[in-house]
Amino acid sequence: MNNLSSFFGKIFKKISEDEKIRNEILCILKEKTKNNFDEDSIQIKEGVVYVKAHPMIKQEILIHKKDILEKIQVTAGNHITDLR
Image 1 (cartoon, rainbow, N blue to C red):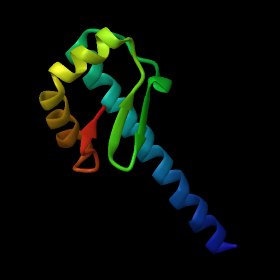
Image 2: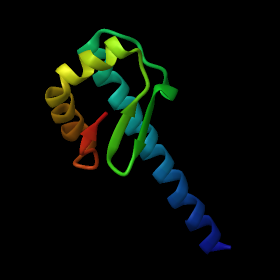
Image 3: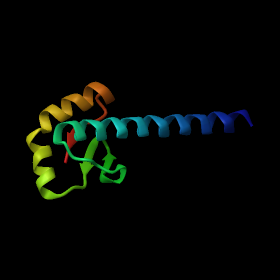
């Protein structure tokens, strides 16, 4: 029973860390682009952040890509390597 509790504790911790990273990324994107993003508008897969947005907003993200990635790496660690 203790193993099961430990297992679910690890899963909960991982989910809450992912949620924290996702919220920090959303705040950084909002700060740099002055646009609001839904939680569903970003996906994180294998260290790459994928943004679903209007092409004009995506272009603005690409213009500020270097600054955004630097801020993300400072706040979320080096887990994030690219932004697309």
